[in-house]
Length: 355
Image 1 (spheres, rainbow, N blue to C red):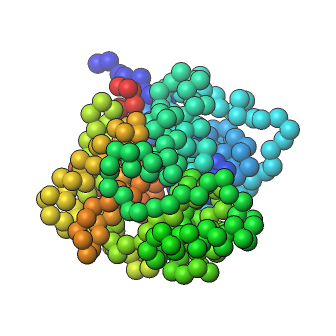
Image 2: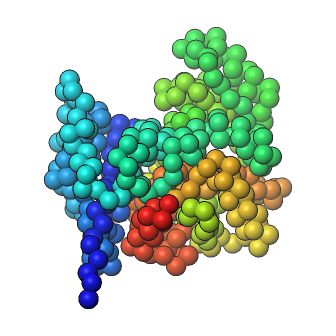
């Protein structure tokens, strides 16, 4: 009997984005799946934790952060400021890695930066490439491409190259927004995730506050018309051929699907969503077309709105490194589609090996 050599999977997590702790939770889930009874004979793991200041830690300390019962206190012990030298070249230890599994949500991860760095190691990685990641992260560029392709979206405006530290600029922008969009509106940083920096605004003063909040995260801002909608999501995996999960719906108790709704509160998740077949087919078609348009492959979560009054489907956004926490939709969608978390993680690694 020939025993296959284990593949060494390099998990990279943490990072200096505002989704630092979400990344840790996602990495814990993937780590647990890789060392599970199902996968322990196929994979070994090395982990690389990046603290909030961009300092990389070696495998031993990183595994401590990932242990099942570890708390945020463990990670907090490693929040040291960077020394004069940049240390990832010493701690990345890429020679022993067979396949990378980046789980950096937000900037320097989802935006393609980590994909560009890892490309120099000449090792495959789980997920998409630089271009698709960058486009999927940037809401303004993503929406402009979708507009060009006539993919249905809610009405929106963009703000770029404006000084929002100037009160007159904010006031004039608020007037323009009210003139061009129906209230309420959602004000979003162009590059952020997990609903961080997003506000729902119902009048001029709330719009001005929302612009300031988004500006603190990103100088490029998108404003979307707020509709009365159902939130629908599906997962995609694959390279040349994209497979789509069941479609799920999130029912939340808050006014909208904000950060607390996603990670702190208990939501009702319905998988498969209770929608007509023609909606399901439309969603699956748009999901594939939109991912192909942005060169997104490997895995992603595609989010949609179903407007209650008009019964129209609108594409919301694509997440190129969706959450893997116990409350995250992506693993739940695939679990309902026949892949439990251990199988899903192994499948994603197999896909990356074939790319």
